[in-house]
Image (cartoon, rainbow, N blue to C red; front, side, top):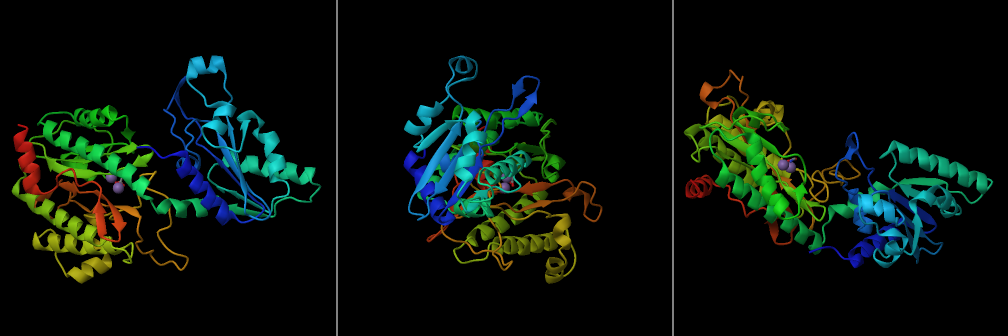
Length: 440
Ligand code: GLY
Ligand code: MN
Ligand code: MN
């Protein structure tokens, strides 16, 4: 499954409509980034650029110009020209003809002509939409183009208003179409398969990176790459929220926390599972895990249309704190602990985030009045509560120290309630232990 050119065109239509008459939007893809010497990181197009164009080559800029009636717009794509020698070295290019024939551009130009051609496009427009502040080099370029247009027009017919393009694009990206959800479902299925394989393959004394390799095997077999750096943390490494070294041995009797997932056709998945290295939870691991699981299940159920974005977090915090009190890991009054946020030493992150083309996806979490937005159909979020008992937390009995647990699923808000995209990987204690027992 892939998006078609009609899907990308429909997005450009909606953007042009929101820009109004006599406006121009200019958006560049990501720069290529060098790793070292002559080696670069594998290129990944900018999400918003790809969202509008479906064009995945580097060195590309899209321009959308509305006319004075706002009924019509022109879509131009600046891209690399075809070049036999460069293509022998660096791979295929769509070129100018390809931009028009395969990517539905009305006009296409060599990227080298951008500085020249853009002046005539800016002249006689009232508003310029661009991603203000996103890239310093692009801010500088736009200033230079505006000055040139000013000089060329002798101060006449030059834009007077500069608008934040991201404000429109980010809001568009918050709501996923049925096709986008289909892509996210595929990403989630592949990621779930990877987590299942990790549960089957883990053994005491295996290195964390070797377990990461089992996940990468499934991603790679499906033509996917991780949507963020994988976290594979055994024992107390699970208490380091962004642990990515993944270079320690996994110990018998410890849990391992895996936060890893892939992207499919530029749509991300984001899954965390925590399970015992030897296949059996200890009594303390089991007790703490069940608290996190109860919190996660209740928080998922709070992803309901019309509910505040923050509700799953509030629901999760209440259950986590009650669990800490019940297990003797905290003392005091439930309401007071929630109010003072003193639980943050064991639960210091939010319960989720928007998910889409970026793992921490774009979009405002609050409205113009500073209130949390409400869930609407097509919003996709993660629900990922956890508990982390610091290895040096002397306020708790030693048997609890260094246990870190997080459980994370990807959820679509729908008219029929929360739709869990990542349900293909087990998460109950019984199901995890049963799966792991089968693969001994
Ligand atoms: N994997 C990043 C996160 O869960 O937010
Ligand atoms: Mn997440
Ligand atoms: Mn995650």
